Length: 157
Ligand SMILES: [Zn+2]
Image (cartoon, rainbow, N blue to C red; front, side, top):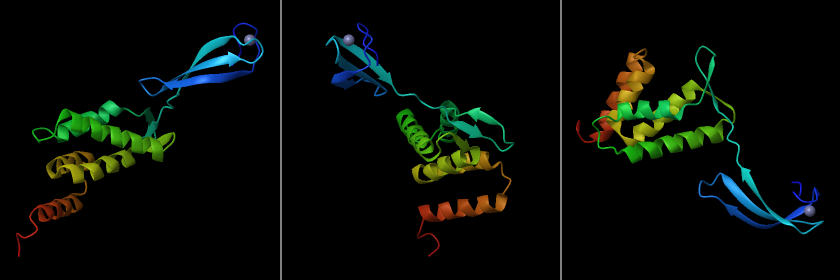
């Protein structure tokens, strides 16, 4: 970081403060050569996460797309807008942590399903049916039965 007065390269940081958005840091610096003080801003670069689709084409990770899919599955369920937002936040955080640059679309679907399964049984079944496109009816039926069984564990005793 060059001093704006004397162009010297060495400066020391006097103060660091994270901005409200948590992605920018403001630093007060003092030039070692001329003691002039100046301010710098550092911004975290968000690397785009690419989604690899079944046909091997890629598109940029679209958080809004996931939010829409979940919102559709949660329609008329006792789930608030904020809960859906938090769910999408968690999913995005986890995907960015596990996959640095590229994530297969199948992994996103599995991640969403695993969370919805714990979150709301009905939303889970709805999402799974859309996601799996009813290609695997047997597994799907088994999953629904399992789910019903979990909700009413004493029913068939
Ligand atoms: Zn200087």
